[in-house]
Image (cartoon, rainbow, N blue to C red; front, side, top):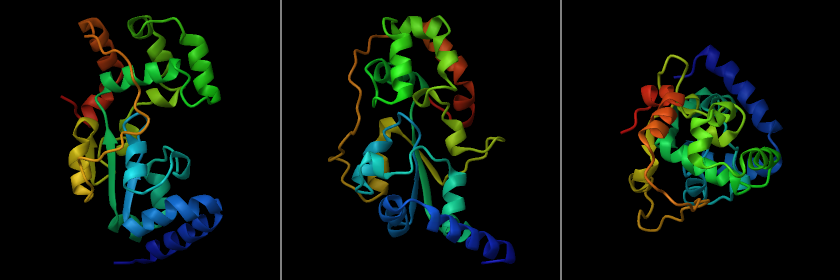
Length: 218
């Protein structure tokens, strides 16, 4: 049902779409409209795999780590309500450790990647967490951003239709009608995974407490 407020918002969304750079209109926006599905890409949660395997796009063809409000503003309220909105999340401890090794390995070579690698090179993961470095990078480096702002409002209410956990990405693939036995696993960071001390795990849980409260992780 379209009301007067929707009409004004739809016109504003049309104008926004016209202003989107041409390559994005022909790639990300086209695929979203074609598949009637909006993927919210949380950093370091396997998103590039979804972008490649479901949308058939390269990592630079997407809208980065845009949040739901961006897609609502671009698509308009009618499409946004009708389309399937979903996201991948990841246990904060695993995500934090993956982000650390991704960063000290140079990441994608951006300025933020360079700054992180230069500052934290030589630190062990345990030192990074327990000596306060994690807290100082949470709001500065995208791989450590909290996950809940990408999928939930300030009051904790969800802004997406479905949240999938990375360790069950096979379920997401099946729900999307994809072959769960043929997942490309893009941008996978290789590193040793020794058991972490309770102190390290507890410190990470404390930093990402809101993620645990809003999203929930085993």
